[in-house]
Length: 524
Image (cartoon, rainbow, N blue to C red; front, top):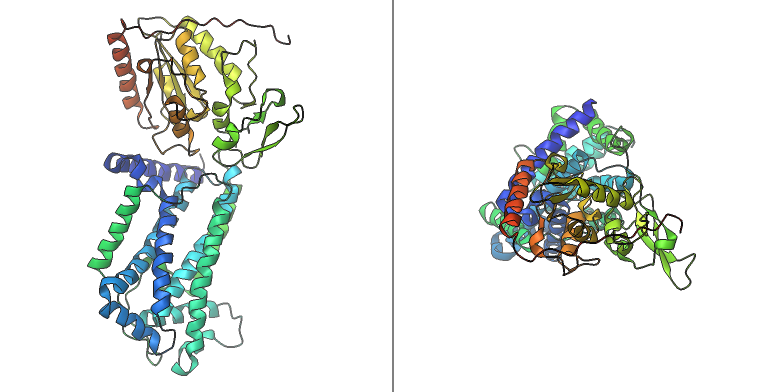
């Protein structure tokens, strides 16, 4: 294992442990680590809303800018002061969740293949976020703003692009005028607009973007910001004085960390770190990583254009086009560049039912590495060899708990690419073919690497999404136990409990009539 892979695995393990701990404390839906992208959008909306009000009341003149912001904090602390503090702390929160989101996607190997576009478009957003944050501190024009402006100009002067040092513009009060602050406000509005445009590009290939967190997570995050705003209100430092060197300023380490870094080392080292880190982020997809999975394949004769795969695809990889063989019908077309190879589309296809009498089950859309026909034959073969009082079939996924450890004389275990790949009809097929119960597992809730795998399957099993499990299937004989890679013991206990419950109700009329598939020789 390479150093890069070992480091990524170590960080991934740390993230998984933290996520499991937050699951216990808050539940998957309100787990902030599982919804970093949604939290980023939420904090951005807080920044926009509070920034609009601040823009209205701030005087952008040299003399008035410091006074207007100070008056807002002192005289209107109950509204304007709180909004200013919200604006400051939402900036820090946005930076934090943005960087955590970046590291988490890297740790889970989600930066190459079909995710390459989102990864590459997300890197420039880091620069835009910091440019906007640093510019926001300049607008206040206190000693911290003076310190940041001088430090920034010194960093740019390291390149020696201009004939004279640009930092000289901040050594005398005569060089700063009202137009400078008008320009600052223009930048502080324009850069966030570019950021929002970049965010649209970042997510526009993803369907059903999680643009807002769950209600409790959103309100809880807002209350935390309000508590910070009340406990430690954002206040201005002493007014900027270009005749003196700004010392002993309070640094916002989340936004302005580059200035102490440059002074502690050198401007050249700081630029090397920033530009080198950016190049490294762009180069990461070129390093060895997990081999990309084969993409879904459409079989035109078996595709009826129902659009279910199009609706359920998490990454918008499926589009609908005119059917080549069926007039006035459509056919699904897979964009290989966007396909995650998850198989969720297979579980959405109505032709993926094992009750079809063909010797070879060919569905409208399938995964070449795990065809649905192979799953049907494997299920039939394994059921013929099961023995014991209570026979159970377990369906799991590659990213969840390892279900192969559950295989036994009375238990058949099948690992799918994703839990969402399982057509609900396979549950009924297993029960009619001799199984006493079917246990379905996969990643923890909201933990699917393909976003909606377990969520879509859960809806199909509860008759809320097509294709759904038929109502004739007794609920007692089907159970869900979502479990991640570290939950294998919990999954084993869930299986034992399921078996005990089935045996307790063995005398009830919950069995389905057996189904014997009439095979048709292939080619007829």
